[in-house]
View (cartoon, one colour):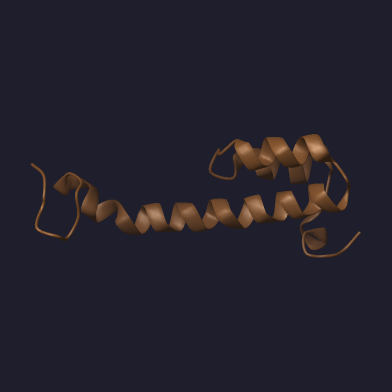
Length: 80
């Protein structure tokens, strides 16, 4: 049921999903960082706040980057 031997405090079935959670967190941090950076550079305060507060595993961040401000993949890491 639960593992309280110092290895973790969650159910035992969660342990195999640890790497998936880590990859999902890294994915989300990457896209959130890019979206926040672009919204801040463009002076879009409302988008910055929305992107900062709403966590959607990168989905809203990707929508903002590619559909709202219409960046191309080659423009993701350039200053505008």
